[in-house]
Length: 301
Image (cartoon, helix red, strand yellow):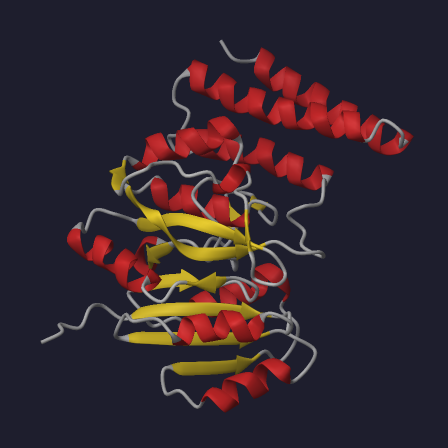
């Protein structure tokens, strides 16, 4: 006899219609029970709502936002609507393997101290074809393992890279997340966008350990139009801010690890400045940011 696990909420902050059908189908295919799927529709059209209606699945709750909430607002809306003890976001262009929620939920059930469970993920292209790993999707372990939260956070910060995963990759305990202000992605005085997921994972890791599953349980789609591929100065500032906020939360406790994290930001800033050398204004702004990072490094004892 199958014993039901805790209710898990798969939350889809939907906007883009093109890949929604694949993402939604992968949520419906999850083997974990009990499961709810919450779709928060922030799109201008009707295709997403029509796809949900055709599914006619009692596990699904569909909410059409009365007004456009934007990226952070729609994620926050979904989180507020979740009823599950466990929460997994699913980007509307990604896909989950059928046993994704079941495997990660079992890990969390086996160890109540865990704040989140994540896994390896595979990169796919616009057509759903497997692609080589990118830096962020490089496996962090070849075996399933529990990791100290602060050590994992330090590792991520030292590389200035979200090695934990996109929103679609992680399953976490809902009661370990406290909204700051009115946003899921606010940490301290800052609202994160480029590093929204990383800021949330670090807040969770400050409260306890994480589980990593070495088999890919989700698929991260890379395609034209995504913001992740754009080089933006605002994203560099977020990398600097998150180092400071993380220090306040107990990460990067030693001067050596703090320096390594700032040097990773400096390396990214230098690359950005070099790429912007033909654009006088952008190059000047990048140089100014690089000087700010250098001053932060210089303050370390």
